[in-house]
Image (cartoon, one colour):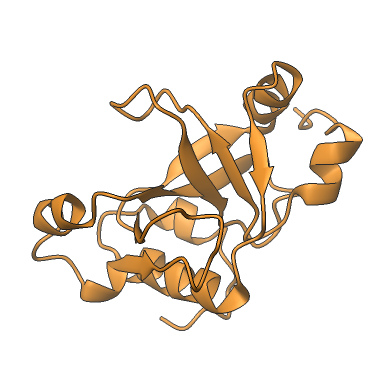
Length: 149
């Protein structure tokens, strides 16, 4: 089945490093979070692979103790001004979002687009996801192949 056609605003913003802010059913918190698009080719992939940001850095570090240190990427406001405080990207957990769900959130105005993540930060997240023993190979294959392993 072909993925649905994206509305023009989504087509114009959807790329590696796009940051969206919305609620996701896969999180225990009902609050919206920042999600980062990780796909190398998000326009043509059937699903989006997303990493999520959390301001609870110490809690995430405790929960992920024993996993590769590269799998937690801390981003300061100086690196990404749309984060209001230091934020950790846990590369040990990625989320799938279908194009249909993205369109649904967009149409319901449940989705906000933010500045793209800088390429240097995105590169660290790709490396973290690839080094994580907890992320499936099927998801890792949707990342750019030239990402340092």
